[in-house]
Image (cartoon, rainbow, N blue to C red; front, side, top):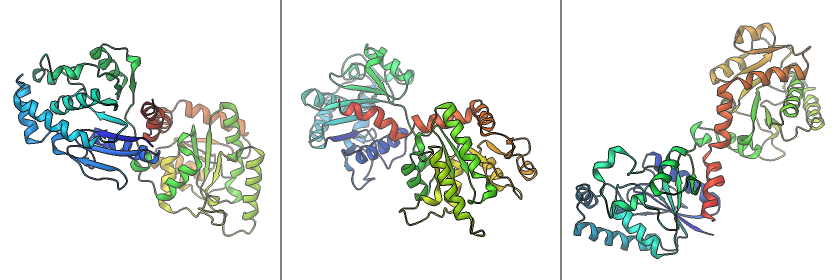
Length: 412
């Protein structure tokens, strides 16, 4: 098991873009089987299984650091600078003891603690440490910092390629800036964008988090929601048929979530579920149609979804698919509208009252699944919010970014 250090001037629970990145990297690497140590000047323990080393000399705001930084800003490399480099070098030795890879955020390219930059560069040159220089910001390309930078050491360390280091930037623009600064090919620099944690951002319930993970919903190409009890008037079989056509026509991994249990007032509703399960198998949709009633924590326990998880389903879904043959009004249309997702529903007078001209209607008794699927494809293809939602979900989750791009660097 590799020991990974993540290093910056500050770390969680402090708030900031780099600190948030560190938190997600540390947790995801821990879950991926690495030993993780966070090293910084300001911060505290934020996870019981993540080792945390705090040394104020690694900070950008320690009084002694600020005094040396003020001298450096005037172009003065004094004895105080060299003394601080020596102190920080001595502190780095135990902090990095046993570390295989150090992810250094901003330290190799930003001037907020130049004694730390000099000490880390020297440590990396003398040791077998694999350094990943993770560059959010570049001092030498930022006009705001030019008055504080001078020719020679230690400022030149911020614009020189450190031997054997792997460089990472957070955008293609920053990648080209850094390549020009270091005089290297942009292909030699990895781009790892910022990301998002959907469960945290959307405040999912523990049930939603379990379902998303178990069913693999985050990588779906489209998620349709059918919030209804399993009764025949909900016409759920049509939704399955439409989904099968959509998947066949597009080759895309479209999913359908059906939220409710069998209706309680008709004893034949249990047989309706059996019929839907048989149809799901005939259409080869076992991995694409999810009846939440059957997704309890074990096979013997049905899942009765609570209101908070239902709300999560609306935030998770990309569209509402509502093929009922009878409705009294149509609350799901309102809920979908409030959630900002497109609606595809039956052409029934009560649904017109709630959907008006702002939803896509079809005739559930006469329109073929092929016709309905074509309508859905046309609308989604022209809905920018749908395309953005799917792209963010698939490409910009922290776990995806870290597994796709960061871990291969650590294992290089």
